[in-house]
Length: 166
Image: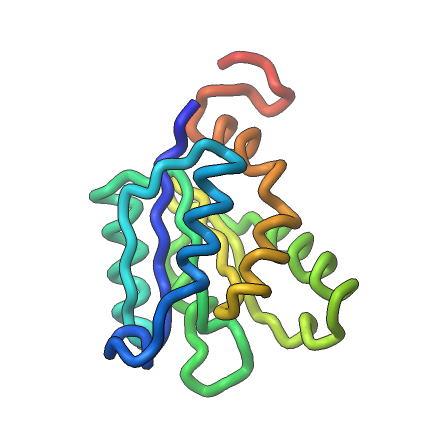
């Protein structure tokens, strides 16, 4: 099964072309290799809540992504607003993903406790916030990637909650 995946990078410098978006490349590689995902949309926006929200809404409602992975804007800095933007557009929380990523990352560095990343569902789309660094993206996504196909199959109605065919 091929999953439709969108990547959203929240970065002031990235949106101005002042920084190469290597974190999105890590996401792309892991998604294509590990879960047979197809990147259907990729975008870089500034750290502005309204712009992040608008991109998330378009990726779910227009592009109909099964999964949206954000990178950047999850820390404690004043302009880190990705979690707030995500919470503003989701219908339901799915906290286990963010909890698992934080728990896994805490085994690597105590700074993981500074992450404010969230995870949730809009319609039939799962949205996960990832850190902004390539290393953080790799570690966090690796912590949950094996559960994504099952979660997406349930969310999209292709599979029942217990692995039964829908």
